[in-house]
Image 1 (cartoon, helix red, strand yellow):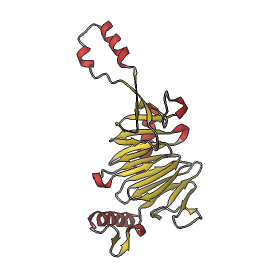
Image 2 (cartoon, helix red, strand yellow):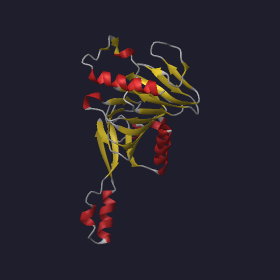
Image 3 (cartoon, rainbow, N blue to C red):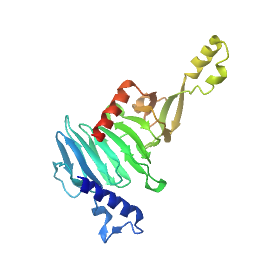
Image 4 (cartoon, rainbow, N blue to C red):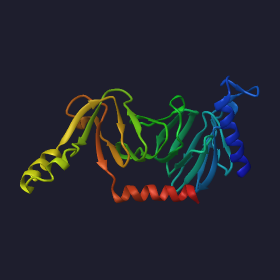
Length: 251
């Protein structure tokens, strides 16, 4: 396993330094491995890009451009990308390695721990409800019930697939300090106003760390939109989910 990871690191360095990204040592980059399977729990399948037949995933198996990973009930799989980033598919998930800069998550819950990348080598994750642009961060995407993105650290950009989002956020109480010295009654009146929602219509926006997005049905929007999006604080359940995945990749 260590030799495979060492080879992966060497490949990533070659890819970064190569002036001709089309080939490395005469071999097409597309034929080089994009990821390696580190850990498997339960039933996991691989659908190779050049095949219509799935096969059972194997520990230490190399994955290539266009390969799709599929997990079944009670199954999980941990993969490591060429830059040592970690990705965990929970049960009933599908993830395609489109290329070095793009992943396609069709279903299920997937945990991403992505290494810091330069502006020209960012990673994009396409989901059924948005496109997520990242450079170095830790987050979870769940496609169930309309979709959810939970960001533990870093910053991600969220882009609509088609129309604008109807984004619902709580107003930030940025002027709290200015009101600390005032009477409690006056502050409570201000706080009630500050906690109102702000609704905006946007095609792209940034999600800050320790925040969670839930994507709803477009029919819930006040105007025509891609979907209604509500931003929330982390819950204890969200923190526990991150702790679970963090323990898995560190074992």
